[in-house]
Image 1 (cartoon, rainbow, N blue to C red):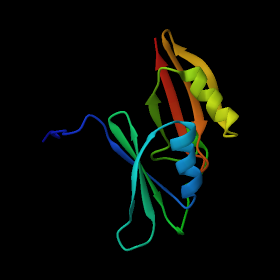
Image 2: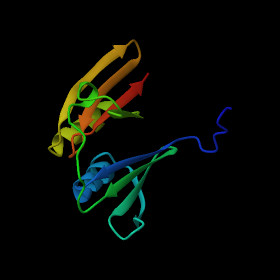
Image 3: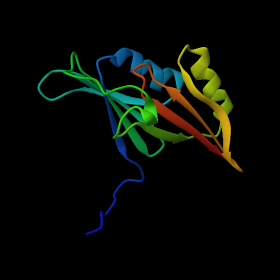
Length: 134
């Protein structure tokens, strides 16, 4: 069996109890296009939907949660630890994150010829790799 993909991107869910801060980070600092909000089934929580290219970032803000994933990015634990956004303005994006007071985990560097990356952290400590190709 092979998946028959119907969309040129993925939907990524980030669950948080820090909804306002995460929404401000992804919408106002990174500049993702806020598509709208919707209540979560059962009446607890709100989903903020943000467009990132062909992908949708779903920030699911809950009033409380039983546990939190351990921080630390790639080396912090097994499982999903970061995601990558390809950009055309890496230096400006990293500066905007720093100027807004958020953590720059890895400053801009050349990974290989023609490929530069940086890693930033959202207010919950989730890592976002920013990648620029020549």
